[in-house]
Length: 544
Image (cartoon, rainbow, N blue to C red; front, top):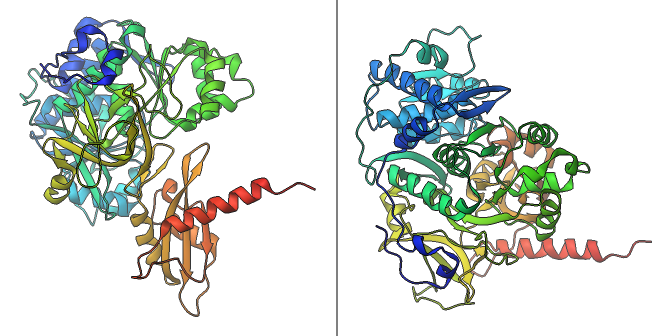
């Protein structure tokens, strides 16, 4: 039983969730229970094909059986480097059945980014698709992966590549899942950047992830009919938000998960018209694309009854336009890789407040503190601290960062926030310089490190600038070395060889110098201030 101290936001909870009962179970049990309860109902729809819950569990058990025969051991790390596809869900839950630790990997990562994760997590097995196979091939002589498995790669005849389809078809179903300790055993390592630019792997236990599913469900349950919903899964499952809010929650409530491999506005609208999804965990870019589509009202968006948004603030005008079309209320929220991810959500029957991330989900407590660790009252700005069953165990193989982030049971988020008298929270800035682009966390230090490797770059500063669609865009300021010239387009092309496309600066400005204080510390805030003033002047300039 999770004890929750009385807080101002509790008035928005129903009486029976003040003392939230959180069972200690494995992730695999979520699927097993739903397979028994909703056996003949559709679990996954992808490209016109469907898989029911009984068949989904059967494929999961067969794959787990094959892996057991191949001597995969509890606690070993398996990288899932795939786009949205049924194989992702099957592999994820087969790993949980064997007690493996899933390492979620963006299939667009470059070899440099991939090697950082493989080295840090000591990954033994990797599953790739046609998008990521080439990257794995490039590093096979540098990093020895014990087994590489392919999803949708039957056309590739490679003796060192196991085909997932074959492993599922020939495997004897796993009879008994490996016993795990839900509170202690890590289920997923979700990588995020560090304050120094070095990656950090958030260790999420079975308990972290299952309780976040329950927490999310309690916020939505008045609108959810068990076994009757269809979840539009357009957010990548390798992203912590897609993993929990689309996949894990979807399976828990017996929903039909409508998998979208890659978000394309027109194609997704056609899917909505055809399948009439009822739940949509989206990011601002997706809502903006729907709100701005000239014929969005023709595609039946009014089938959506539970719409959540995360990863970045959603402009109020976009909310109004989307809700006018869909007749559904967008529930904004907040989360982090370190919190499985959801910590806050707008209550269904509560007031919507512009700019707010909502209230803490059940079982979660929050504080706002000043730089001296003094607890602040309402309306004061300070660092947001979070405590709850969804908070990570720590960072993988990184005791120093773990001690800095987790203190006395509280997660120090690094985000600056404030709380009003009703218990609604507002993010007002970030202590860290993290940039959020389309739901992805980007760390300037990593990009600056790549820029500094270029032969013509003397100094580099990377900042995030507000953007209506993406949340923020990346701008780099460059000071060339003496006698060298920097071509912005050439430098961006260089970055594309070192970075995932969404990390490449959208704008590059070449300058003679960068602003610094008396002791030489770079003052990035002045760069942002200068850019915002420039935008304002451009906006206010009279048109002749």
